[in-house]
Amino acid sequence: MGKRSVPELNSSSTADISFILLIFFLTTTSMDTDRGLARRLPPPPEDNVEQDDTKVKERNVLQVRINAMDELMIGGDYADVSEIRARAKEFIENPENLPNLPDKSPRDIDLFGTVYITDKHVISLQSDRGTSYSKYFEVQNELVAAYNELRDELSRRKFGKSFAELSEEQNLAVRQYYPMKISEAEPKNYAK
Amino acid sequence: MPALNTSSLPDLIFTILFFFMIVTTMREVTLMVEFKVPKGTEIEKMTKKSLVSYIYVGKPTRELRAKVGNGTQIQLNDKFASLYEVQDYVYQEREAMKEIDKPFMKVSLKVDRDTRMGIVTDIKQELRKAWALNINYSADNRN
Image 1 (cartoon, each protein chain N blue to C red):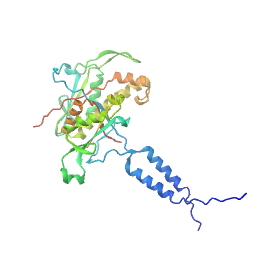
Image 2 (tube, rainbow over the protein chains, first blue to last red):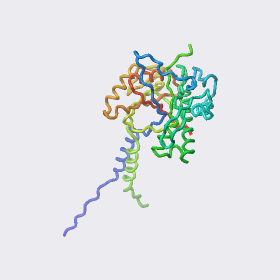
Image 3 (cartoon, rainbow over the protein chains, first blue to last red):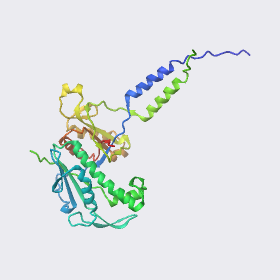
Image 4 (cartoon, each protein chain N blue to C red):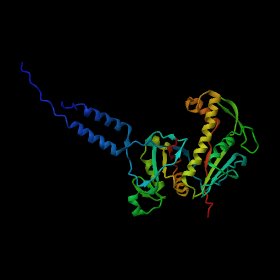
């Protein structure tokens, strides 16, 4: 019945080893989560097919142009970035059914029934080759903000919740009510 | 003075190590361009990293400036590329993906905020030709 004692292992360097591992992972990995504005580009133009088969009525298009000096034009007049959101919201919603804003057509949407929405509207964003990317992005951001605000207001009115809290079915219905239609127009070179 | 008991120190360090192993991802490319992405209020998180390919656009880093000059460059994978290589890059990236994921391919444009739109539009046109239609303008949150 001899009791043998096992000599204790010297583990004082384990800390150093794990420190080295830690430093290795700190240097070779990155924590960045990619965030941004998701967009869908139109399919490539086909050469043999005549373009412009989808004629859009003038009242259904909101032209937003940015020139090489980063100046902004909405429709026919100069504007500031801060004005875009309100202009876009009015354009998308057409609350008073004005004849110069997009026409409304009846649509059947789940949860809403038959509603009159401006589903033919298009916001066309055009930039010059000299426009700065930050300005372009700012405008894109404002346009998305306009849609998000409208959707949020509608969700609160109809379901009493914010757009982010809606269930999948409600979310889809609201998105059908205000479909996002921002056209990434063909590039043009204005400034010569 | 009694010696401090450090026997739990390795465990502590291991815990930190595991934390970093879980929350971080391997850096895929070494950046050769400098860029500051624009700031926005409406941005969303990108899901599913395996579906995303990256295109970096910006000015070369300071060390590379002597070699390639100050002009805006496009970086694909680990090297500078011309506009005409964008399509090939998309095809390659798509080829490397699983068949079921191919239609959901996304291209994230990490573009410096001072870039002119001309080069961005050119890249977008190339992406359209390559049928990579889902894009993402990479941005930071503005508070």
